[in-house]
Image (cartoon, rainbow, N blue to C red; front, side, top):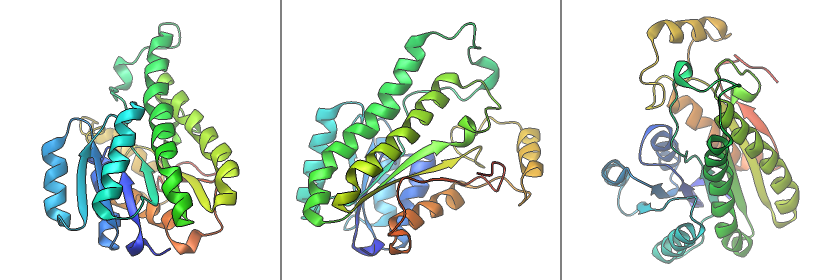
Length: 254
């Protein structure tokens, strides 16, 4: 299925990387369901930017299965056809400040639990809510947003990194389970992006250090990262599933 014929749900689309993911799909002609939890004004601004005929902003906490089911039902009714592509981008609350994060001897399991609920629980809820529509359409794409930190753990984001690593496992087991239904499940993993809400406070010298460590000699932008999602949603990757594509300028090589 061509991207222009797809209904794409982007979770956490109200700001940061989520907005760039939505813009990438909009540029290719897709119709968008822009999920947000607290960024209503920016999500609605994005609808105005894309066009109200092609984008719909809906609030839901993806960790709440009931809210996600209601979102999917509303979106399906609005567009008159099922959601065929899900981009699991939403994050639970997290402070991306390496100096302030708890080290190994001090981190509490409740912090891990919060990340697992948001990252794994959120992805599980969106996938399960959209599987019936994907089966009806005979086609489905799920793209989970990961991190290169579980291959290159340069900051002590223990809880966040563990949840994203578990999301990779879910990506692969769900790819095996859903493949017979022509539903593909893949992951895109990035590192520091220039610039999102998460990296806004990052010192310039850190950006320079990362850029100098990559073969491309630059820090990946949110727009560059978002473009990679188009590959997994396009017919060009119709035989690709269960994969993790690292998009960080070559900092981490598989």
